[in-house]
Amino acid sequence: MFTKRWFAITILIVLLFSSLTGCGSGGGDQIVSTGATSTTTATVMGLDPHALYYFAVSAYNGASSPCSNEVQAAASPSGTVSLIWNGVSDSTVSAYDVHYGKQSPEQHADCSYSDVLRVPVSS
Image: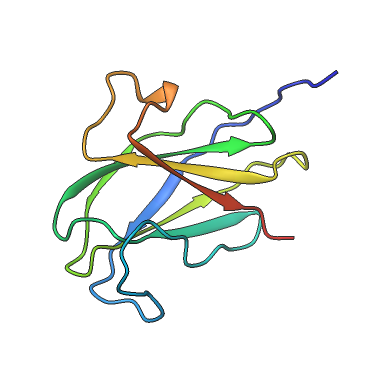
């Protein structure tokens, strides 16, 4: 029997980069890097430059946890936003989902954003 056990995730910092090496020009959303389990980072690419986006993170282990607090950031001129957050201390978490969109959902805890990226947990 699968038991859900989640801890709150808080997005710590939104980092903005005006340029980022290694990003292809083909557009689309990509995860550039992930960090250790205790602190995880992800860079969302292929965003509309200078556009305002809303972000929240949830833990994933076959099912998603409720979303973290919501943060907002304007994409850099190159169309990127980088996030960093503290991971949960649950060994069953296999990934984090970065939920984002140009509109904030009415109830962000339900994670009903227009886009999502899955960030695998580094081992």
